[in-house]
Amino acid sequence: MAGDAMNRMFSALALALLASPIAGCGGAPDQPPLAGARIGGPFALTDQDGRTVRDTDFAGRYRIVYFGYTYCPDVCPTDMQKIGQAMRELDKSDPKLSQKIVPIFITVDPERDTPAAIKQFVANFHPRIVGLTGTPEQIAKVAKDYAVYFKKQPAAPGGGYLVDHLAVAFLMGPQGEPIASLPIDRDGAAIAEQVRHWVR
Ligand code: NI
View 1: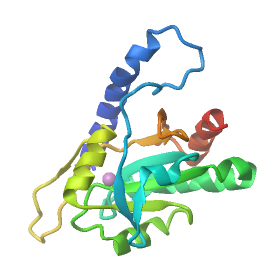
View 2: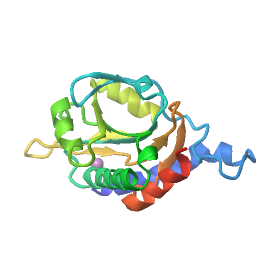
View 3: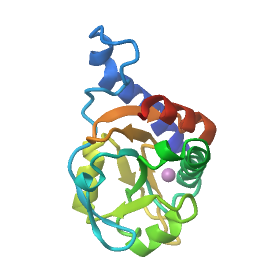
């Protein structure tokens, strides 16, 4: 949807702003672009099997975090496809590195995205994706913590609705610290390359 494209532009801008204080610090040339940015934080959500999952459950592992919704007509499935593609490529080329990474999908449509709906959705892309949902309050908080804008649009005559949202894939480090936003507008190979660059 057009809103997603606009959000992508907005996200690039917002991320540049978030990261800008670091750029001026004269740090190491290869400092992660999002080092020190206020992205991420603690959460307790529900996974695709109905279990409670906390951010601390991923301690020691890198995470690729993407917010979207299973009813998304175009952008989310395409982006998740690319993340899945990147993970499959890493599984083959760098299996040890790949095992250090957890792809995480967090819904911005908790009303419709039940654990069962999310389970079916994420299974399309890669077997290790953790899909998370929660109460509207929990989702609003985690999205805010990740600086991800989303807004439910007015329902269409048939009752369906779209959710306008920021489409960005964050690479987070083993302590939950933000590292970089992955090139989700490119392809799986480009994403895999960025992951290889940052994951140790
Ligand atoms: Ni979408």
